[in-house]
Length: 170
Image (tube, rainbow, N blue to C red; front, side):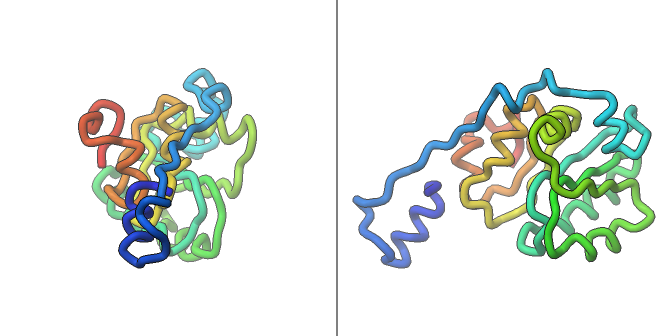
């Protein structure tokens, strides 16, 4: 588990502290790489306005992901576009929340399309405070996209304090 989840397990007395080990994470940097930046994908994600700043989110569209945070971001950055890449039970509410705004909902993408989507964004925003591992953060970073994420769960293991501000912000 991440350091945060390890501490939670220890506090809940689920297992002994000496049995908890940090699981270092990694992603396939050949599949997630800046070379996959693609104008056609960017045009798709910006609804035909590829010159506008593009915020991306990749993951499950669930209420626990705090995705309503993106609405506040968009309210402060009116010239931006946002793309939600993924699906889940909160999608209808999100589509209603972002009605009339420059938002694109792609549904689930895989393989080359997913690689292109990551690399074609300008910033990846992860507001969830319940991420245990945060693979999507690693995938975004591997794709050359700066990350803004909640300082919660396993995300601080990925973005150590001494690196904050260089590639990502918590």
